[in-house]
Image (spheres, rainbow, N blue to C red):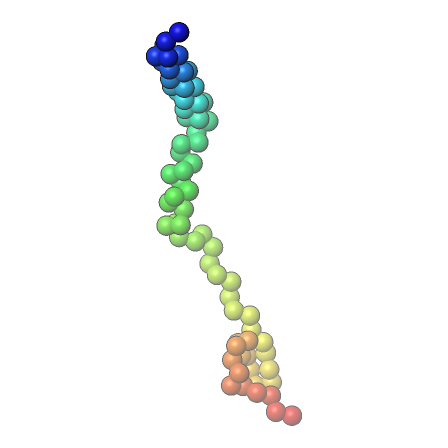
Length: 73
């Protein structure tokens, strides 16, 4: 038996299998998901950052990171 017909048969089977898998993947919409995922880092954030927590003292309101207002007893 010649090797050429066996190679042609294997090649044809691989091509048909690849086409079947491509059509199956295209019908599921997997191709469109990759476009959305690659552009996702370019989108703006939908939510605003939360406000900084604050603490109150006798002298007024100061932010949690403000150390210039110290309470003296």
